[in-house]
Length: 415
Image (cartoon, rainbow, N blue to C red; front, side):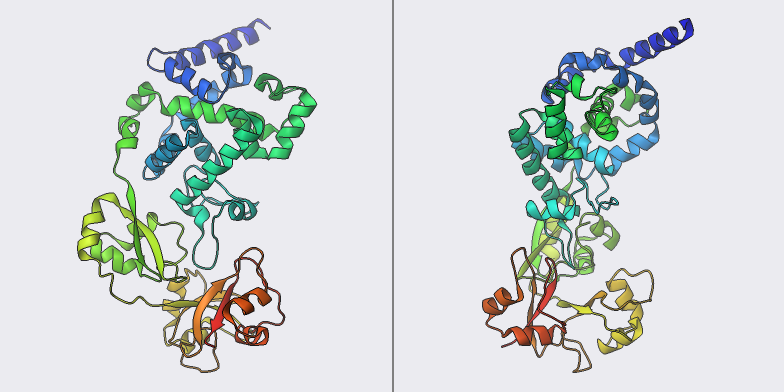
């Protein structure tokens, strides 16, 4: 028993020493205040026991996570500051995704903020054959801010907004009702289990990462002091381009690799901007903005693209032949790792290059544009919008019936 008490005392002393240096203590009190948490939360027994995790977080792995978000962090910080959202929510994103815009979950969540499709649509993020704005660092952050503000308005405290972000509004509401209070120390009670285990650790993880990343001592000890000034680092800017603009053309005009340009645009599913509408956008390094203005030819007409739904008997080679291209180029265009095709697979094809008149989905002679189905749309509303008979829309798109789904691309033939 004596050994157990001694061990707990030493653990407490070790973490207390880490958390309460002159350099860091004021920052930690500010973080607690920003999250509407009492200062007594520093005495939370489980938070103290996470001392073992501190040793793990202090490794290069943790610092690599910070570094991986280096190009996104300044944008996140600026957006949150302007909206009055506590900067500690930066570490909510880190907890959710390790700042990886391609991070995904079994619940089909994606992006830095891990939006599931339904929530993404609710907050205006588009996902279709060409883009997934859940992976857009700017738009997803703007959506997350609106969501967090709504949760704060609903619950009145930022730590409750964070918990609801993790486990849902209903779960937090039920937990408060069952506990009879929204006191954080009661809600996190390990014996009562008012909240799921992951959620009980959630706030503690966010604060721990906030404390560590704000620690001058840890950064200096690991040779990562440059991360302390990351908010001042040059990041990226948004530029307007024509729909369907080739990323390769942009990369060459500003003197960077295609791979680097893609890293700034994780929301783009292909090596071109969305071909829908007249204008599109992409992000480029901030220090290449003048070069872009001077060198990129905005008058060049980009290649247009359409969605081809594969039919029974199609192969990648046969589809490529119809569009006058090699199957390797078609694989590259669609980021395919295998040449195997299944029926009803959406394949991006160049618009207007079909060599077979029987292929209607991307024939320049009868296609005016693509329309992406939105919430509330039906084949009848699209028909009325473009003054095209329903039967013609069904035939052009080789549909078996009049059913459409959100995010589906519909070819609108010339009337």
